[in-house]
Image 1: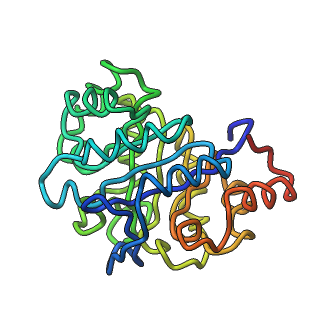
Image 2: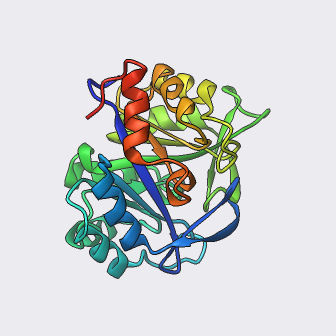
Length: 253
């Protein structure tokens, strides 16, 4: 675990708007990404994660104009994912203001992409995004999915994470599809399992619904905690999450 835990709001974007659903389904509008990013920056977010959740499904490019506008409003690291298929896509996103790039579906389809990105830009730029669901068909009991959680792959999530780290991934964004949007708490078993195989930072995502959900995720091994709807719906602020972590003895930024 890193010395200081990061708190990261996530902007899931479709057609230029922030959306949120439950278990990656029934997406509804949650606001303007640029306005929300600016608000979270003002509240003390350590980073912003921007995921174009339909870019891969729609076979189109990430909305570069929204990325640029978001980057102009925040002066903290901005991770962008969705529709990244090549090192040229990465270069273009970095040129539009992204600091780190999330890859998922394209890396599973062609694993050498991970090494290509790491070799060209450095491991610190590459965040492997893992949309994970529980499965009875994999060794670990966790399966990685693609296309915004819509397509099961049959690939063991822990095995794929370990392979991607070997290929050069600098960070793991571990999102539990089963917990996503439920507000019932992070999948602690999944976080613990990922921590056990990972020598790079682990970001826990999916399931946050109350302040008391965040410290256990850190205790399970998360280096950063990520949430979306609880911030979009103003159920809590970045500052309140940080205060709750601090009260639990967690060192924050």
